[in-house]
Amino acid sequence: MVAALIAGSLFTRQLLWTPISAINMTDIVSNQFKMSNASFSGTDKNGEPFQIHARSGRQEYENPDIILLDYVSGTTTRISDGTRIRDNITANAGEYNRTTRTITLTDNVRVDSSNGDKIRTEELVIKL
Image (cartoon, rainbow, N blue to C red; front, side):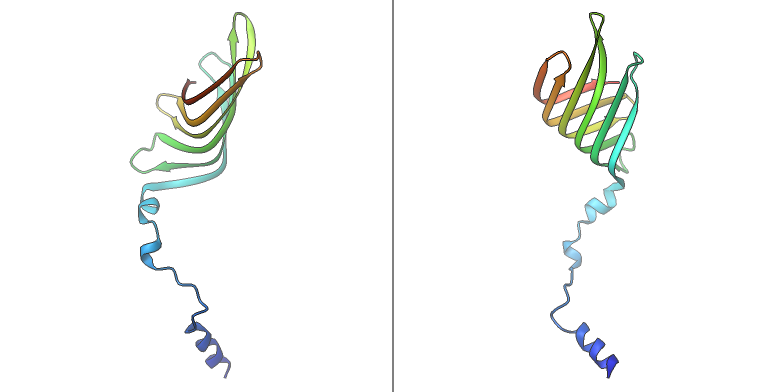
């Protein structure tokens, strides 16, 4: 009797079936790995510290040197006229190129500097 109840419930319309056509196979095949709350920190070519955080990141099989980032935030430090300036940076998307050590930020890029400077743009390239 129990087996009949269990088997009967498997054939009702209450189960939610996902058709194979609804699965995004391109996303599964192209993404080698995904990261949540990814952080990366280090020093740039001038020895100044930087930190990058992304809500998510992913790497594709075809481009192993590029890490695609979503909802990026970070800080950089630079020296200008002998003054140390800290830049707080946010963007909706970005790409980190491990070979060229550049970060290309796109979509609603905002830079707020400790010296009062502000930048609002759609694309910003940072060389580390």
